Every structure is written in structure tokens, then in C-alpha cells.
Image 1: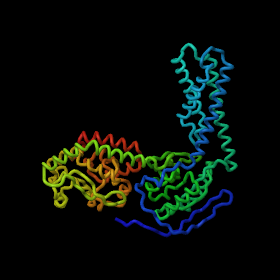
Image 2: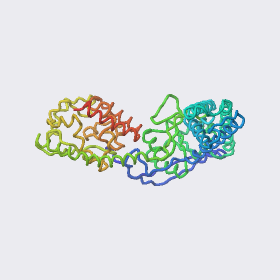
Image 3: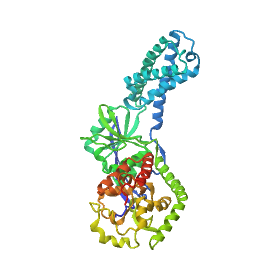
Image 4: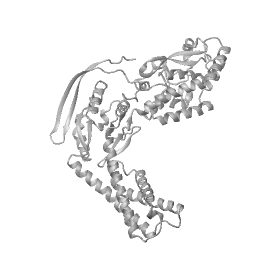
Length: 501
């Protein structure tokens, strides 16, 4: 395993870009003490609010307020000019509140309050208003079929709602454009790209007319030696979004998680060819599609929820399963001589070795006997060692492995913070020594008792590369919901005895 860097000196070059004066190069030379590795690739130094959230709330709040005014005015005019009809819908303020709630809710459900061109989606607005009117008609029929409003009032309200809501969005859009042309309500962004692509990417960003490019750096700013200083600079400058060319991201998985945990929205600029990353969505700058990975509202919050869940869940399970532990320990002692527990060196987070706890399922000299059995290894690429009829396994050991009961003591490792309930399985040093460089990414997150690999075939997967792909897919797509899904699938897999030996 390579030694980790403790400190380094470097020069960081950042171009500060001004739309009026051009590009000014600022060279910062300093000595940086690289801090210790974070406890997990997905963790942040602290929870923080997404950058630019205030302006987003202000934009959405303004649109909703304009729509409320437009719909209220449409309803009042429809009641006044429509055929009079004695109905609680026209006499009670609570029904107007219901109307506004349904209308605004339908517009929001259609995504018409999102940024970009969504507020200018007038066909979508017409569709949302029409559907909400039909829903209100259904509610009225089920509530009081004899006393809603007259047909003329209903039709007037529908027409006026469409006209007024579309007008309110148009006014908001025009007002926003005017203010942005004067330099107001623009989003501060940072551009990271190769020098040869800088001018073309600046022109592309300027087309959207809503960004102020506050700085430009080349791809070396995302190298490991410069990365922390770059993110420190972005945080101090209040950068909301970062535009990064695809070629500038040399280690995409690390960098994408780093932007997310910093609360900065990452927008990946297009290149030739079709690309896609998990958690990414396509977004338009003018007529050019770009890929973006949105920053969460509270960066790092999900990971701490995971850790609290791991800690509380493992403690509760240890307490509830204590009679099972006692029974298994007794059976192991009656079956063969040797200790109840088996502690083996495994490679965990950042390649650090730790002792994993398991119920002993093999004879006491099993590790010494493995060398003689290597020729019978059933994993095709030889990285892992698996045998269906391993002669080292005891009688009770076969039963424990069949139902994965030998893994239960690993709850101790979870309590100690060495493992998680869900994550890539920790492997012995013998297996890690055969890793290729691309495999080590799985060591950048806490290992788990169960994982995506285990619920997708367990030992039936005969190629290590296929298993690594599942581990990387888990890291890229990780969420608290995914962990819960894997835990539920684990229960089913264990009881089905799928791929267990």
C-alpha cells in the first residue's frame, strides 16, 4: 500500500475573470499541511446549507406570490362577472384557500417553479391550470353536487387563470432578464477547464445570462495536492455553482463527492461523445445540453444519519440477539475444539487493517491450509478465494454460513466505527494485495456487513470484476434509502440461502 502524503508545497494558479476588464491572473504560493483523511469518502467536514439556497427560495417565493395574486384576481372577477349562484364556494374564504392550494400544488408538481426555462413553459402552465380546474370540479361534485358555481363562472375562472398565470410568469421572466442585464441577481460561479477550452466555455456560460464568472482555474486545481485549497477558496468566495469540463476531472468519483459535500452544485460541461454519471441530470445552457450533479440542501447530513442509524441499530441488535449469540457459542464449543470467535485481519477504510469479528466456522488452522487449496479456487480471476465444498469448514460452520449467522459478531465492529451495516465487504490482505489500481476506490468508504454485491448474487458471482462493479455502483448511487433497500433485500437473501456456502 502506498504511504499517504502528510504535507506538501505547491503553487495554485487561479484566473479571476471579469466580464468588463478581462482575465487577471493571481498566483498564490503557500505551504499546505494536508489534514488526515476524512472518515469516509461521502462525509463532509461539517453539515452546511447548499450555496445559493436563499436566492432560490426568493425566486420560487416570488413566482408563487405572483401566481397567488393572479389566481385570486381570476377567481374574484369570475365570481363577479359569472352567473350568480348561491354557493359556499363563492361566499366562504376557506374555499378560496382550497382553490389556491390545488392550483399552486399542481403547478409545483409539474416542475414549473424550477430554475432555467421551466417558468417559461407556457404549455405546461396551461396543462397544470386545466388539470387543477378539473380536480376542483371533481372535489365540488363529491362535496356538494347541487351547489358549486355556475358554468359561466367556472369557464371564466379557467380562462382568466390561464391568462393571468402565464402573464405573471412572463412578467417575472422579463423582470429577471432586466435585472440580470444590469448585473443583479446573478449566480457567482467558478470555471475549471483546460486553457485551450477556456474561451469557448466562457462564451457558453455567458449565453445563459444569469452567471457571474468569479474565477477560472485549470484542471490541476482538482489534483489531490491542490484540491483542498481550491475548495477552501470556493467556499470563501461564496461560489454557488462550479462549471468543470469533463476532461478536467481526472478522478471523477472523488471530485463529484467533494463538490457535493461542499454544498456546491457541479455542472459538467459537454465534450464530444455521450457521457453519463449517476445522480446527474441534463440541463440546458441556451441550446447546449450540459450534465449537472446538484448539491443537496444540507450537505453531509445523509452520512451522519447513516452513522447514527448504524450505531443505534447495532446496539439494539446486540441486545436482542444476545440469546442467539449464547446458543451459537455453545454449539460451536460442542462441535469442535477452539475459540468461539474468529478474529481475522481485514483491510478497511483507506487501506487500514483491523480485526473483523466472526463466529468460528472452520478448523483452527484454516489459514495455514489455504495455501494447499489455492488450485481449487472457484473465483476465475483469483483475486478472492471461494470454494463450495471447503474441507476446512466444520459441521456447525456450514449451518452458520448458510444463514450468514457467522457474520453476527461484526456488529461489534459497527459499534467501534470500523464497519457499517451496509457497504463493500472488507477483504483479507491476501485479496487486497492482488488489487489493480482501479479496485482501491472501494476502500474509500466504510466496509459493511452486507452490501449491493451480497444481495446481487453473494458467492454465485464468479468474477471479482463483476463484484467490484457492484461496489462502485453502490458508492456512486449511495443514499440512506439505498442502504435501507439493501438491508431489506439482505433479509430475503439470507432466508432464501441464495449463493451461500
